[in-house]
Image (cartoon, rainbow, N blue to C red; front, side, top):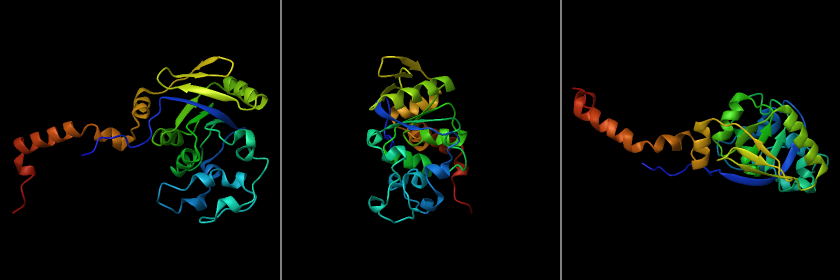
Length: 221
């Protein structure tokens, strides 16, 4: 039984910040429903924020490189092209519980999401997909928006072990994260991967059951 990490681990990350300056961004805006037909966990990055990012109506199987871009949307602006830290307003990821939304964010290249609040299921799904969602006070998020808009190339350094964010001017911002999802993210483990690390104990338990309760394992007559 394999015990290796099931996803990309996270410890430190520094990336350009992309500001999504709107509240209550739901999962259908993050990844519209028509792109959820595939059960494969690949190919969603080009359709991230599809309805905001392109000027036409997106459909599965269409080559996104030929579609007209919305020049006013942040992902299409040159200064945010290589962004990997998303800054949003309250209640990010609300709406349906589709895990495809974190898939699209991760496949686009985001590693960190910062907002005053997240929808609960979306928040949990982020940790399962190598994304670090960080909740900060609204006033702190407001200040970060101001700095991002005022400084091209604005980047944040995120340190998960110490639970700190460092701004370009050297300000250190503390954030909270629950111990279990933190440990899993540091090791690159989703829930299945975390369970597989217990494989020796599971086998030991099952072997003991076979010895003490052999009738559980005998074929019916």
